Image 1 (tube, helix red, strand yellow):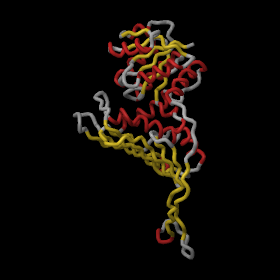
Image 2: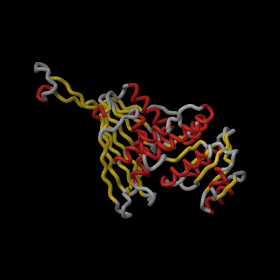
Image 3: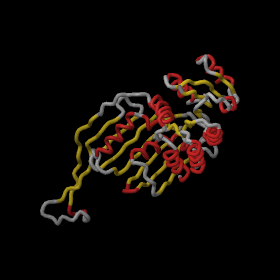
Image 4: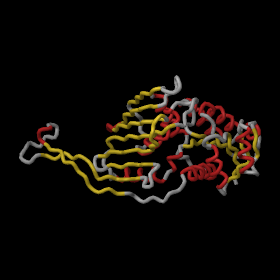
Length: 328
């Protein structure tokens, strides 16, 4: 049985606490939060958990094996370093830190201490995201041409990070996973701060990958629609992953094929020698057996501690995501 402490019980913290508390392989011993109201929430709903506003209570407790950090990104690095130096494994909410250097420092200390450092990129534990990966790897889509994502809604507006750092880590993490962690060739973004000076509310990011793959990420908390959708266009087929739809994956046998004109020279570099064939075939919806991604994320963290296996969302993946955010 692993004893866990959680630091932070704000917006996402209650979901983590719920899943940690339900896992039979761990015991949440302590929750740390500066807010009286949030500590009362924990005390009223989880009567066996110790609540405190002092992080040292968790750091100095020899019975605690791991610490879950669900606080603003500006605090991630300091809290992670303190936890690792105290001999605790860490699960850190996304992104792992503000800079690649900070991520690498976390990784270095974790390696030196033989501890697990993992970031909570929850979508990499989503069965629909896994299914799309299977479809890509099977070759069903052909060569990937481009990917575009929308993660927009009206609110929740933050002032500690902009829309890019708040929302885009999800899409960057997913795209990196689908494409087998490539190094981007070029990254460009444009954003605007309409509500708060210096804090972009809407951002468009373009990433140019090897093999002429292009990715466009649109994030905003200033939009009339709630959209959580990623489209992948391949040479053979196309797939749409819609996280808030009932049918989360739709595969389209659609595309435009080049067809040589009979009797003409077969020169595909000359557009006068071929025709375009618009293909509009079947639409399929793969079946998936849904499991709450956060439940799987928590279980993976526990498994990595108990079996010493590498984390899917360890520092290497975390650094790739932060590098793209930093480079934009």
